[in-house]
Figure 1 (cartoon, rainbow, N blue to C red):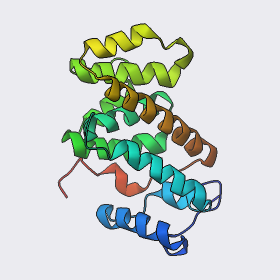
Figure 2: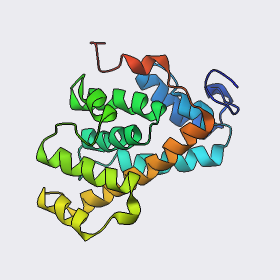
Figure 3: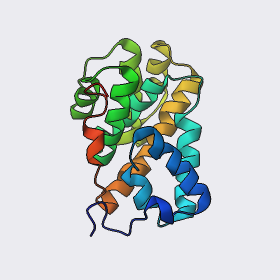
Length: 190
């Protein structure tokens, strides 16, 4: 087992050209290669599919804000006890929400964290899908709509929850360790 994963990891320079370019752009922006890409890189087709679906959901300019998208990830990853995603996406949430404490509050107890009505509706919807999806029904949709979420935004909450349920489970499978750099991002000025 490496210090990153139970399974093989790939360095940036060893990725296929297209992935080296994509992951390299992320590394350039953040200053490091997030370990998820090193861990998934030994299966390039899966890393491409993961990045494509991630970008389709998380980089959209309409619907949920980028901070709200990260709120879904941090809340569900906290509920799923996924350290990697809580730490990595907690950093992104801190930056996007411009709040150095929000990610810690959300990840430690997403059921009770104080949020505005819209944020609470987003988190509640994500949590029922993450933890008890078989009970999901019209009442959950009505509550989300009553808080002002559109059907497109509700879809985003569900799709992001589903993608990160997969991501959380891959992180557990691999015992994926977060990069140390994530811990300070969004907490102190760069």
